[in-house]
Image (cartoon, rainbow, N blue to C red; front, side, top):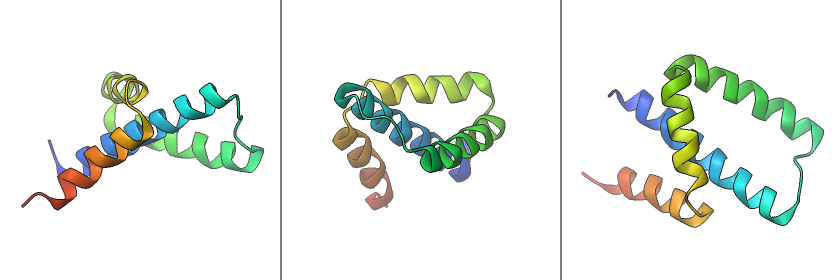
Length: 79
């Protein structure tokens, strides 16, 4: 797995965790944010493929936002 793929998976998990928080709080995305979100999701899906994208999204949905951030930061701090 390349560093780029790891970063893409991290991004998807962060987006998914944030989406879970928004759903829980019943706070929809602003229209201008939704356009950017859709563009990034399309790019990330193209980069990883649908199966890997969905696996990362599902994993992110299971995390709290704090857990998702900690997992990314923990990896970046590792030697």
